Length: 100
Image 1 (cartoon, helix red, strand yellow):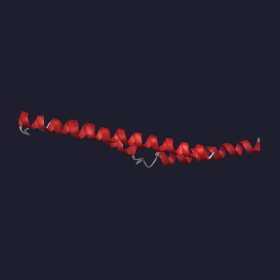
Image 2 (cartoon, one colour; image 1 turned 180 degrees about the vertical axis):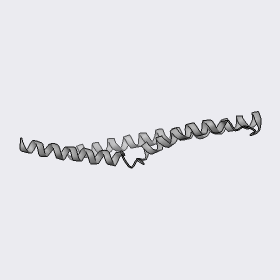
Image 3 (tube, helix red, strand yellow; image 1 turned 30 degrees about the vertical axis):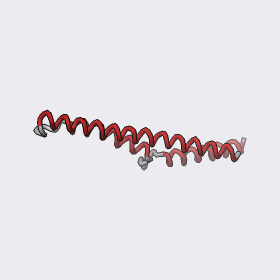
Image 4 (tube, one colour; image 1 turned 60 degrees about the vertical axis):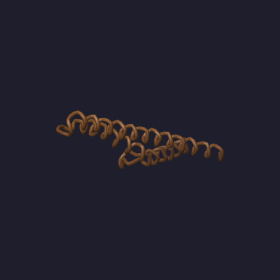
């Protein structure tokens, strides 16, 4: 049982590291690409119309939602909510099975 708990913790930690890696990779891509678009924008029209902001805004919304999922910032249906519900359902199942 102890090995199972350790393995379970390891797998959860590994999953979390993978989510963090994907988020930081996405954030790095965002910074590099938006910076390149800003440079192109500057050299083509010298900020007369800052069209790169449209891309920055759109992709930024995606980054925001990715951060909410990665760092468990959703107060309603985050990972802690999932864990509470799983434990609640397991307790209910134990109660039902106890009476059968």
